[in-house]
Image 1 (cartoon, one colour):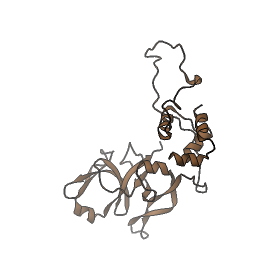
Image 2 (cartoon, one colour):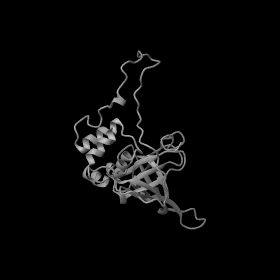
Image 3 (spheres, one colour):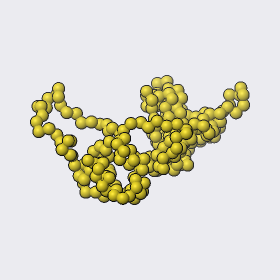
Image 4 (spheres, helix red, strand yellow):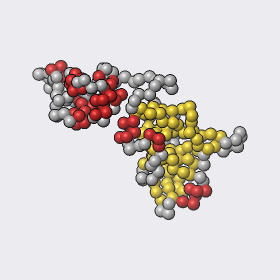
Length: 243
């Protein structure tokens, strides 16, 4: 019913024209109309606000969604618990040869590259092979410019349990100003690191891991930052964890 209302609103417009008119994610709209994603209450309310529809146009329950006329007494055993998750549809499988949608961009990864064989010295460079797809709207919502976004893979257990080994984080290179307690990616003498940062008097910083039992705080003065070649790459705006 909700999808049919959307189709009626579109009229003769194409999906792209409709998405552009109301600043919608074209890929998301296409999946809704094709039945690949369900339109839940929260998403329907958001669409009502964006399109300028009267409240209840999309969120009013249909006969199939109305609550039953009778229900069992509310007891601890059968108490109805509200859901805290929303089904957004199936996961699309893609690879490097899959064309980008109109509202998608590729975001490159940063990697450590050994400068010379056996020296142990590394430098941080952009990978020309490894990349991740992001929706332009996702980046816009985080105020991230597409050309400033990079991805970094977390190694080790220092950021567990929030970021287990192998997690991927999205980094905004356009935001290097430190806000206490936020996560940032750093280039530490050619080594990629992800830490929560705190400012110290005199221009220094404190690096903090979530796993503080094994990885205590590190403090560096402004002079030590230069000496140890520590550079803030950018602020973490997104992360993905595989368990």
